[in-house]
Image 1 (spheres, rainbow, N blue to C red):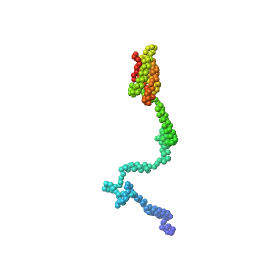
Image 2 (image 1 turned 120 degrees about the vertical axis):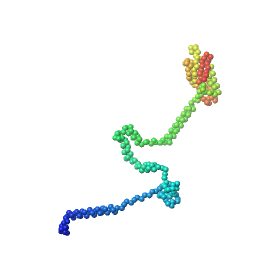
Image 3 (image 1 turned 90 degrees about the horizontal axis):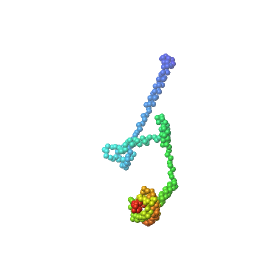
Image 4 (image 1 turned 120 degrees about the horizontal axis):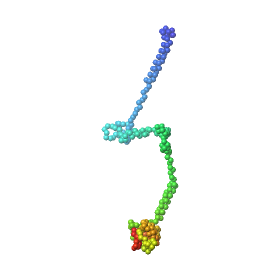
Length: 290
């Protein structure tokens, strides 16, 4: 055989080249055969389901759409159409995005906080802003609820304070001030006439003098009288211009007291009667008016 090959002029190099060619041809054939035998991917079958709002017991003869329950068509359109909703699709898209958006993880929150606190465009935050961020991230402390006993004690203390205020208000004297603008009852006017006449009579008998010289003037005086007729206080509201005459007027009022007690019906309504009068000292004597 070797002799024949040499006789035909076939060298060892030719045999090697032929062998390599045959091997490459066989491998190429095998590779192409594998690609051709691969099956195509199956196409996914989709079915559009229409959501029905109501369910009918009667099954339609010919259904226009697929749905989860039986529902007969209705409406005013001549052609078939799906049931629609007045809500815009943007609202559904927003809801879908909100539902599909992943919740922030603890790592992302910490990373975001570090970015906010660390720098803005490479610059450090001011201490005041840093403190504010820390204050906002600080968990709020839950105030402990007061017990029923503590609330009961607070209510009892408030009720006691209210009772004390009522008692103090009840102890306050019932004062009636009679001035020019006041409308006096018949009993009040009689009692006022009694007090005024007694003071004027006392003043005429003890006319104010200074170094043997009579004093003239018109001091305006407030006279407060208890229900038993005694004097509570005498205050000069408007001076006569002569301090000696003002002092003498106070002395005359105290000298005219005590007065008669309040009548029973007057005593039920008031504890103190404040009478404001202007006393006039002139040559004819002493007089007074509201």
